[in-house]
Image 1 (tube, rainbow, N blue to C red):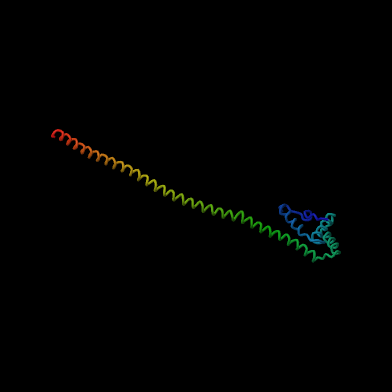
Image 2: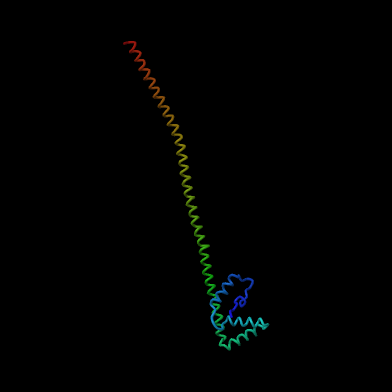
Length: 183
């Protein structure tokens, strides 16, 4: 007859059903053959269900179990065995919890640190670009001044050339007139 461990171990209001179920499953998976703590506890529960007080139920279940070779030492050893099973589950849970901390917290902190570094790198690049833009704006302002200066210089050169041209043309035309009239 299979033992219903849920009925055997009662939960309290503070116990999470999922974790309690996991502990029950671990105990069930580690159950030993023969009359041990689980079968003893089942006998006690059955006797208590027949309106027997707890102390009498313990003594009656033990008296019956003792007839098939269960001693108090073996019974205590069996309880300690199941406690070790539960303790092992606690250790597994602690390891899983640590792993989750690593995955969900530590790696997120690492990711946040990398994001912070990237943002600082972008801020440095933005600052460098701002400085370059300021230099280009200054250069553009200088270029505008240089353009105006170049236009003025070209216009002055043009005027100087035209003045020299006009003067030369006048001389040549005067010489043509003189040659035509004197020769």
